[in-house]
Length: 305
Ligand SMILES: [Ca+2]
Ligand SMILES: [Ca+2]
Image (cartoon, rainbow, N blue to C red):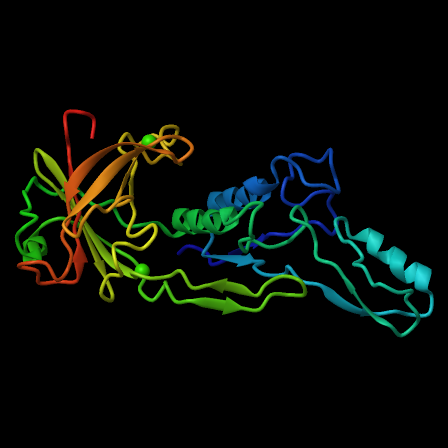
């Protein structure tokens, strides 16, 4: 029987090391490095855990972008000096001379020395979060990739029930478009975001020899197609991250010309919209509908679309 043991992934080493996030770039012990956002230390921790393949992996370190409350002691100079021990720590502006008994706060660690993986605005964004997902998938395994379904045409003018027996299904969490109103620490926040709408629950893809068909189902009725950035569908047609915007060579629905017509557009590296072609589109409320669905079709055209 396999012995049970656990590997703990420490996301912080900064108390006793010169750098935290970029263990391979120690020439700049107190500052950000070009590798800060790459998660090299985290990757090294995962490699070690995966090589051992233990019964449990415990990941510690999520959210400590915070300030620590302190009370000034008698020896003020020594009290302040002790923070030199924490590389990256910074004494915030107190706005007045500190006296014994005063409460003060030691500022957050900077991006390099934060011991945590929660996303940040700018900087490394959500790199560490996705690195966590990748590590968990490698450790726990994932289901087999979906197999390509046999070719079967979809009549865009027909009913949505055609999709019941065809198309590969992909599922999304629901209620992930809820508005956000969260307070932040000190000068940060509040974090407001009320842009969420069209909560996607299921996506299906089907094809025949001429067309690719996309079926997108949402929890509630779709918002108006006149919304900005409404139901954008990005396609990496050549499966090459180096081409198109962030790898995506085409976008569907950037310009919805009418209720039953939309467009597919080329995108360059900067996200600029280029050549366009027209596509049929069907939403709930149109003739013969039977589900709450948006169904753009993407014809494989000889002009490159
Ligand atoms: Ca969703
Ligand atoms: Ca591409």
